[in-house]
Length: 46
Image (cartoon, rainbow, N blue to C red; front, side):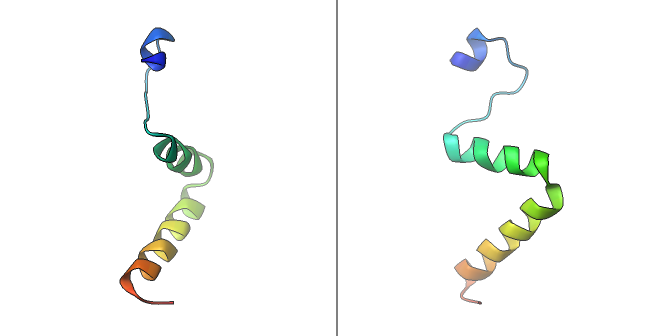
């Protein structure tokens, strides 16, 4: 509710979601690369 109190246009929650959102805003190509590496690890690749 802090975002509502501060009258923010975009409220991203939980904390790890905010970190991912900020990473995507700062470096979209880097965030996509990190996400693809994470998916590869989850899928059993290297």
